[in-house]
Image 1 (cartoon, rainbow, N blue to C red):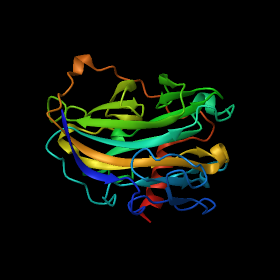
Image 2: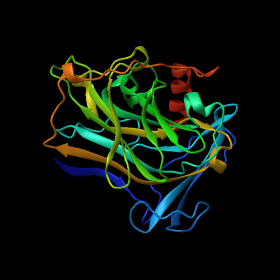
Image 3: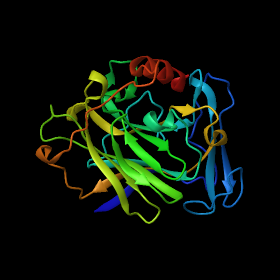
Image 4: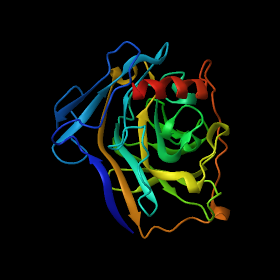
Amino acid sequence: MCRADLYFQGFETDTSGWFQDSGGDGNGSITRVPSGGGTLGLTAADGGFYGETHNNTNAYQAGYGSGGFSYFEGDGTNPTPYPGSPFSQSIDVYIDVNTASDPISSSQGAYWIDMFPSTLVPDADGCGQVGCGDEHNFRLAYTGSSVNVLVDGGGSIATLTTSGWYTFQSTYAMGPTPSSDVLTNMNVFDSLGVLQGTIAVQGNSDGEELLSSDLGGPGLVWLPVWENGFSGDVLGIDDVRAAALLGAAVPEPSNLILLAVVLGGLVGFREKARRQKLMSSLRS
């Protein structure tokens, strides 16, 4: 299978295309730092630079901030076109498995990595041209010696025991008919490209639906929920990418492992209210 990049930001020359959420305490930022430098002193995942994104504390709600987002060169108001084949969206995040755990993070994750494709039909739930019907998230739960990767508040799909860069990827493909839900797989790879965990999820998140006939191209990657103070309010990110997957096989619906989406969990975590509020802030 060949990959053709539709968008790539490796922070080698600038931080364009990565933005901070509005609201909160207003202290979120994205900084381009040389390999070995910055607050974290990391070796870049690729090339000579990486990004440090800083938590905009309380931007989600009291006690929880957010770490910014990218529309993969779109603007969130106009759909990017379907690239003519299945496609992927991904981001590299540095995981220090020895980071101290938090009682809350064991069930909901210390921070989330959300992804959405774009939709050709404006979303009915206030999301504009990103398809909230196919919103899914990786939730990173730290134990003090390992990190469990939860999906949508369900079970863990991977347990990471070695510190390093990991790629969090979602792939999107049309179903067998135009009225079928978009087929989505969520994958975690280590720095060598070895698959650590995968799960197929359905394009009907939170009571909405994204049909294959409405699937556009790349949409949004977002760090919407981040416990204030976790990891010193700074995370290393690199290689924000959207790519057409040429020659990719479309999974058969009978072979999909459909994840039962568990929404909420923490008091006050209301998905639709969150989307409407933060989607509005992203576009402001």
